[in-house]
Image (cartoon, rainbow, N blue to C red; front, side, top):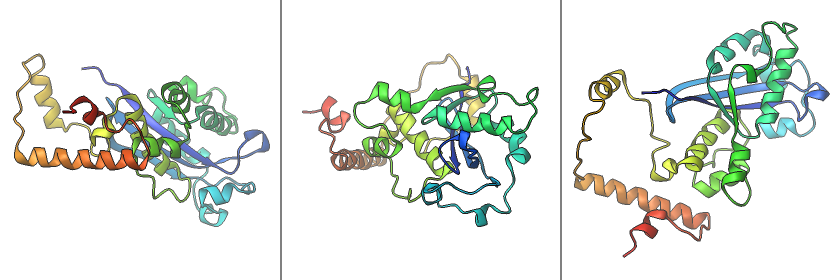
Length: 246
């Protein structure tokens, strides 16, 4: 079985442009294998050695006082690159984050060791993907609303929180799995389960019989989807109702 390793990534910065000397203050990453979160994350705050631009501190909720004892990018770069190397990076508005990561690596003055993140990873811009896939606004908040992803805790922009939201949005955007309630509860198979899968590869698929508990759980998820569709004002409603309408 082929393995598709993806890492959902987000950064927070002191401002909008590297040409003004802005720096990364937070990195958040979530690993997925074959589109399921594994539970492995990479998260760090960073000391930027410069002030926030006007407005940036209000967006992130961070302060230089909080970041004072945090590591600098040079101290974490190897661990960070070890985590993401070889993965497909899923980034909302990828040119922004890639530009900042490349800028941070350029400041290390080791071009033979640290080049561009694009040399280590495939980059997928989920903002561009969303614009090609759905109509309307494609911001992370707008996509959370569209797909019923709970972003009520997003008072500030946080790298790890935004990566978690983007992971759910990406699954919904590309396959609809989160609409069936799978994204939030998905996890990588255990080693025991993987051995079972391997030993039964090629065997006929087992038949499953729904129990009353299964049906109750199904109806609970379906009702949650209907409420989310109504809240998001989706005229199309829930696809299950359209397919199995009497």
